[in-house]
Every structure is written in structure tokens, then in C-alpha cells.
Amino acid sequence: MRVAIDVAGLDGLWWRAERPVRREVPEHPTLFALTGALRLGAPLERTDFLVKPGPGAPYVIPRLLEEARAVAVVSTVEIGTHTGYVVAYFAPADATRRPTNEWGTDTYRVRTPRGLGWGTVDQETRDFALRPWIERKRLRWIAPGDATLTPREGEPDCPYLDIAGPREPQRIQYGRAW
Image (cartoon, rainbow, N blue to C red; front, side, top):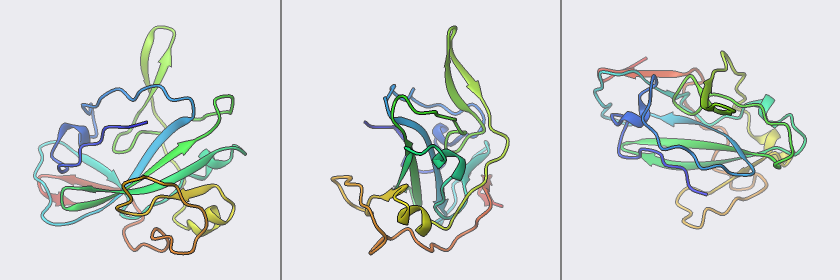
């Protein structure tokens, strides 16, 4: 399964927090959420629109992993001069799936009998302590640069542990970050 992300930089409309322009994510029997974080590089892009790339270090959302069979996979993607940390959440098709806002937005997509709709989650608890989730086999990771995208288990050599960076959501607009 592939999900399109604008990796050229933060000035593309994929990163516009309100009304982003994105391809519809194909239905997948196990993928139910996609979140992320971004370690900012320089220079920052100048945009008229607000960009909400998340915190500066990878994290998981504990409530999404409460389902006994849910797991997350963290990986790295270079986005212009920045380093993105993608976190994809998976659960069996018959599992309870509670959505969260899509990476970079304040909404999530939902299918309704009348077509595609939108919902929102006001606030989420983020857990940056990834080691316990790896130990509990709820978090897997893909090594940066691994073209095979092979999920790995266990913490030895895991590059996502203890990454420094802001733990609060970042905002970017007009070439400034706050």
C-alpha cells in the first residue's frame, strides 16, 4: 500500500492545514490512521497558509494502540530540508478502529452512507517514550533509508528512541515557526 505525501517541501498544498489538497487514501483492510512529526531543517518555506506538521520528534497515540491487536509502524521520510517521521496504525479488519486527525490537519476522513465526510478529534495524548511500546510489540520501525520498507521489532539499533525535538505541535507560516 502506498500513501502520497508531498516530500518536495512544506509549501505544497498537501501541507495546508485547512483544506489540504490530497489524493484520497485507497481503502486498506488494516491501515486506519496516519500521523506524523517533523524535525525542521533550514530554510523554512514561506507560505501564505498555515502548516501544522506536528511535534519535532516521533510519538504514538496511546488510545489508538489500546485495541489489543493494533500496532503502529514508524518510519522516516525526507521532506525538503526537513525530516518527517510517519506513524502508520494498523489493526485487523474486524477490530475496533477509532480515527484520529490525519497528519498535518485538524480532520480525518470518514465514509458515510452519503459519501466521504470529515470528522475531528480535539486533542490527543502523545507518548514520546517509544521504548515501552516497542517492548510490548505494539510499535515496529523501519530503518531510515531502507528501500525494502521492512518493519523491524525490538529496540536494539532502533533510531527513533530518545530523539530530541519539540514535544508540542509546531506551526509554520510566512517563513516563521512557532
